[in-house]
Length: 424
Image (cartoon, rainbow, N blue to C red):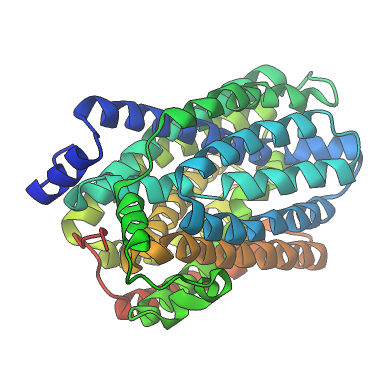
């Protein structure tokens, strides 16, 4: 990592060497593997879970909607991260991912499955590692390093595809989807390595400030609303609105496998999902570099224009009577959608961290996650109702995707944060 002189002095002050930053990067990269794995594997099994529990597509979508309420608890996790520090929650969220995966493996009813998915949503949505990277990376390379960690995380998505190839085939028995969960169990022993990580430099500086004689102790619940009272509240609120729209369209990632399974064999579905993982890697590389070079706002302009086109390709192209056209439409439509969605999700996280001061960064990121979750939950319920009404889950995806055009004027008003200093 290439730090400027002030950043080098702070790192030296807290005993953070090049060797330590290499260890930190490896740890966060592996953590992201587990984060991505537990995020993605529930997206690969909807049709098989629905088959085992004998429920219809719109019922499964509603089940996921209720489970998504787990994301709202992220608000409290990140509020506490502003009080107790970032490091302890690296441990808690990793441990939680492993425990929730075990509960899902042993689920024998829709209710138990929903509860375990609820816990997964709560832990993999915490985004503590995003704050960690933003507060430790050189300010001119913040987006690049964040997205580079995400590239390693895609190995988790690739791993889910490999397990899907093994456990879900034309001849696999009912319940074989549970085999995909095995790898997630390893998050439990790995979580204890979090105690080898040092607290972020920005938070350590904040702790020193809090111990100074003239520092006024803050009320925890007052901090809850402080992001809306900060100098950058206008940009912060706009980031929340953008996050809501992205969340509104995220059900495609959660239950899109149901649409693919209506038109393709399990092997074809696996091929399409593998392609989306590759495009996610490309998105993290391209988005991170482009964001640091051209700015955050321009990424929102370009990506938002192309998103509805990707959904048209996905929802209607796969209905072609030509197998090749249908397969290519599904492959490129879902891949482009993933490229755009994943890129913008990371950008909203970075924008949120760069917009707010250190003492509000955890709670501000929590608000972003909560509003994103609100969009996701509402999007799932709307999708469920539209699918029940029209009998076409693809049409439901398309109608909601038109909301992406609203992101363009919202991003235009937002403050550009490229290269901003986060030690404050």
